[in-house]
Length: 336
Image 1 (cartoon, one colour):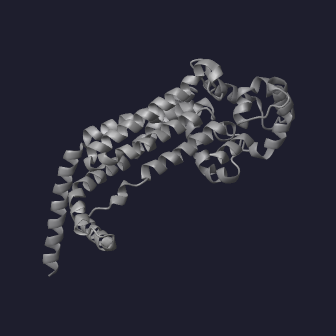
Image 2 (cartoon, rainbow, N blue to C red; image 1 turned 30 degrees about the horizontal axis):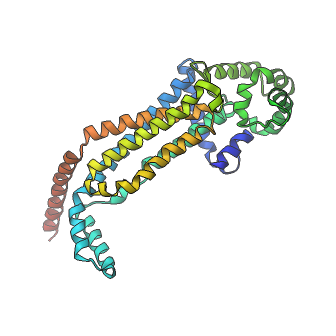
Image 3 (cartoon, rainbow, N blue to C red; image 1 turned 120 degrees about the vertical axis):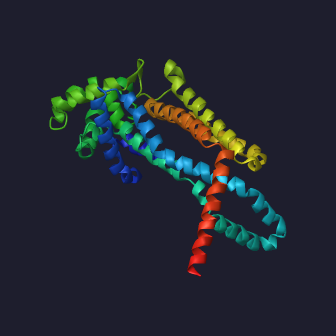
């Protein structure tokens, strides 16, 4: 996370963040298209982005739900094997029998893995790119990196006259957006090939779109700043809601795991608390994305649970397994 902060402060996706440059470019083009389509409605574009990616994730989440249901159905057989080999010395035999059981049932518990979470993290990195580096990737100033140090040197005296002599710029491109009226004359004079009249108009329009209900979403929330503190609070509430709902669904999917939920309670709270803390470190636009993402996640979890309830999914798995097993047996008979 510290590498993200350092790269964002420098104004360019350098160092570790450079590996995400192609992703930033793709997301920037998509965001630019949506902004043109929606009349510069920045936050509506973020909402659409989030819904689309969650829809892309839906098949993975459904598959994960089915795998979880199948694992639950096999739990009595797994427990029987474990009771058969109570001695820790026989653990290898128990593991082998469990693997054989999985093979017979055509089951791979690893399919419950981290695919959806990894996809969400990749998407989050893309969102961070277009929030932190909008001038470069959304507005298309491709030469920004080349002149970033000169631009920083040019605007630093102006920024320090506004924020204080010891002030340092955080989130460089967002800082340009936030103080563009103060920087504009200097930037146009010193970098006319970059800050053309067309580009200046684009920056000003984009800047207007970064205001939501009168709140400047390029700003970093602080308790002293009034209403904008709702962004971190809503991050906490929606993230907590998503975690609680996920835990309830896991209990219903796998009652045997309910005994372990006490030890998982702390883990369940970690992500909401983390998102609450981080949303005070990042521009409010990032927190807005997390809020929307959490709300969509809650709706998606409810949809999947309703469409694929545990008992119905387990029953369907049993039918599918029976059909598959008989098909294999028939194929063996034909070969013999």
